[in-house]
Amino acid sequence: MDAKRGYVPEDERNFSSKALETMKTASRHISFLINEGYDLKQATVFVGNHFLLSERQRLAIMRSLATDRQLRDRKDRQVQLSEAAGKEVWIDGFNIIITLEVMLSNSILLNSMDGTIRDLAALRGTYRLIPETNDAIRLIFTVLRDASVRRVNILLDEPVSNSGRLKARIADIAEEYMFELDIRILREVDWVLYEKENVITSDSVILDHCSSWINLAAQCPDLKKTGLFKVW
Image (cartoon, helix red, strand yellow):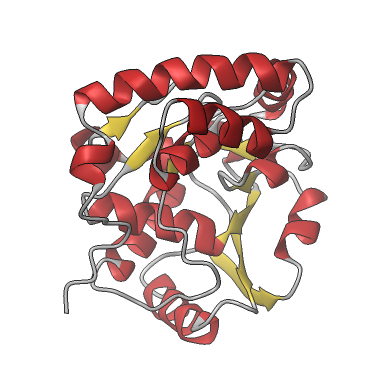
């Protein structure tokens, strides 16, 4: 069964050239409001209603925007992948794997203001392995191997379905690579990552708390073959 992670039939209309221009105009309004202290979700509802945006378009905008202060802080704490040579990294497992599954499925990916690549899969606690899962895991490991990372820590959210199956799949594939590897299933992945350096995620809350982070998805060579949508 072809799952095509992150695909919605209406996306052709939601992200047409005309729709993108409207979304960019709406994003400018929302950016102004959030920089003035308004809540992102409330600002998106207000502006989205004015521009008659679909829920999918609003979600894309919310995942793409950040305040000027957030952008400065995230940039200050971002480190390059090359700086992780000989060190350990901490991976927000579902976050990065799902994004790469979406990329490999040729579904919608967003080029966000902070430089991260985000998806619109919105699995909301439900997850199952798909044909692209193995390639997504291998892509992560290949990029980290080429960067000479010493140790890889992968954290998976316990409440998400099939976390155990994903852990087993990651462990199987990891045998092809020469890493120190630790895979954990935890209830509070975010809280653990808040205290870490060299965190690999695009989760905005984690990015605003962790000591340092790496924009791994943007380093993946296959990303250049994928259409990235900029809605701001």
